[in-house]
Image 1 (cartoon, rainbow, N blue to C red):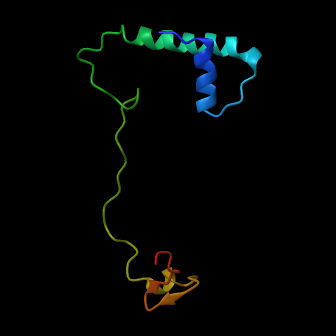
Image 2: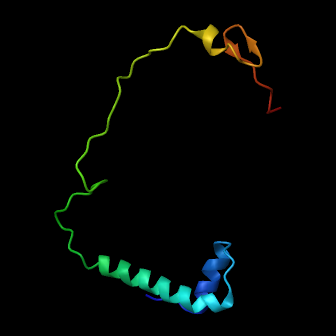
Image 3: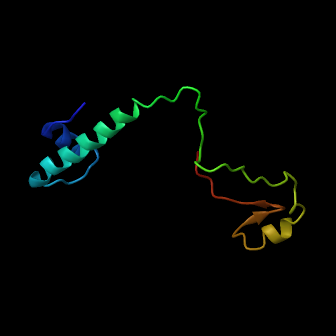
Length: 95
């Protein structure tokens, strides 16, 4: 797969990127190099390789799912511009 100069201009237009006419051939070469590299990746045999999110083994750090700051409505609402009982009051945005 390769792109022509017309496609480069269209991609730039869709991406809302101003591209000077003299830059189009250079961008065409770069896009074609990227597409060529992606085509090379399709040739790699990945049978039996498990998907991974990182090249280094790691585990997600998780915290305990416990309530730690409850029952502090006064502190939470201390700087609220408007409040009613233990709740924030916000302006109505939908009629």
